[in-house]
Amino acid sequence: MNYLKYWKLERSPFQLSGTSSTSFFDQGTVEEAIARIHFLIQSHRRLGTVVGESGVGKSRILREFCSSAAYASKLPSDCRVYYISSAGWSVNRFYRWVSNTIGERTDGCDLYQSAMDSISGGVALHGNLVLVVDDCEQATLDLLKALQNLSGCASRLTLLLALSFATKDSPPQPISRDFQLGQAETASKRAVLAGLANQSQLRIELPAWGLGQTADYFSMMLESAGGRSSIFEAQAITRIHELAEGLVKPMNQIADLSLVAAAARKFSRVPSELIDQICEELGLVSGSGDFNSSQNERFGTARFAVGTKF
Image (cartoon, rainbow, N blue to C red):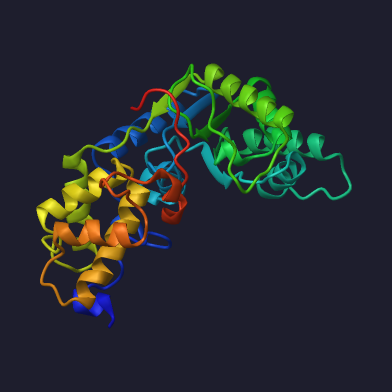
């Protein structure tokens, strides 16, 4: 059964890849984070950081900020914004990207010098450059060191880095399982990430959502997909919020699975009992009904946060 047709939805409300800006949820803590990003750029700060637990929505916010014409219209006219996900990137790949994207392609030249020349040329042409670098905890050590140096040597360049750890004084997150590093390199990466956090001139914290923000999110996403805002029972939304601990990425995936299961059972609404049943069947909660962190990657997100929660 096509669950979208069953619920009279035009698209999946909670599978956000490739969705339009009209479905971007920009309320509550998201709205505040975007306002702070604007302030960072307009005040010409050299280095800012967006920090929060993995799954809280950093990447979605940064991609939307960089691609939305509405947000671009609020920036100075002499400003150009560029976005990259740095997961697995080496410093040479970064330098090539800078040279090819911001400046003119310079094959055969020294990569570092080519990148610096491109940044200087971009500043001369546009006035101010903003590099938004996502997934920094999954970048290579050499790239992190290059970003650290770049933040202090290039004028009229703003770096905005996404970091997945909880407090300024706590250590960075463990490295993703996809990037197996030796202990020495892992320790070095943690030190550089901590250094970037300490050098940050504006720290933009993304906390886990409160229940009210989650309820508003469900209402908006369902309506933007052409459906009824009441498809989920209030207690079902509460239970999803509790299981995901206010993190939007696991909330999206639990909600999407729930829509499929409720349609297969021909329910008129998604009940709270179904949420627990689905998560238990998939091993996403323990027998006591608590979130099973060992199965978290089945949500597509790793819970790396340490120290105090936001």
